[in-house]
Image 1 (spheres, rainbow, N blue to C red):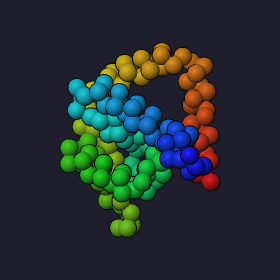
Image 2 (cartoon, rainbow, N blue to C red; image 1 turned 120 degrees about the vertical axis):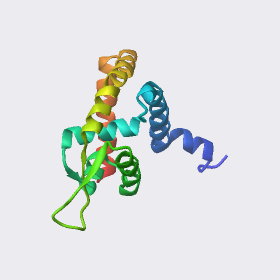
Image 3 (cartoon, rainbow, N blue to C red; image 1 turned 30 degrees about the vertical axis):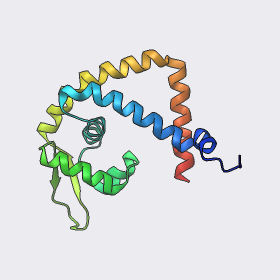
Length: 146
C-alpha cells in the first residue's frame, strides 16, 4: 500500500465526505418536497430570491455559492415554469432576475413540506450537534473562500 492509496484518500477526503453528505441530504429533502414538484435546489433558489428580491445572476451565484453556469441552468427551468422572471437591467451585460407571484405561491406550497423534513433532521441531530455542525461547515466555507 502506498501513501496515495485511493480508497484511504477518499475515506479521509474532506471534499468527498462533504459532497457525499450533501447528496444524501439532498435526496432526503427532494423526497420530502416531491408533492410540491420542486427539488431542494429549486426550493433554495426560490427562498433566496424571496429574501434577496431583484438581483443580478452574478450576485445570486455569489450569495448561494453556486457556479454561474449551474445557476443559469436552474434559473432557465424556473423561468420556463413561471416562478422566476428576467428583469430589464440598466446594463445589457447584466442579467437581473426576481421571483414571480407564481414563484411565491410555489414557495408557500412547499414550505410546510420543507418545515417537516427540517424539523425531523434537527430533532435527530439535536440542537448542540446542529450548532457544532453548522459552525464547522461555516469554517470550511470560509477556508474555501480564501
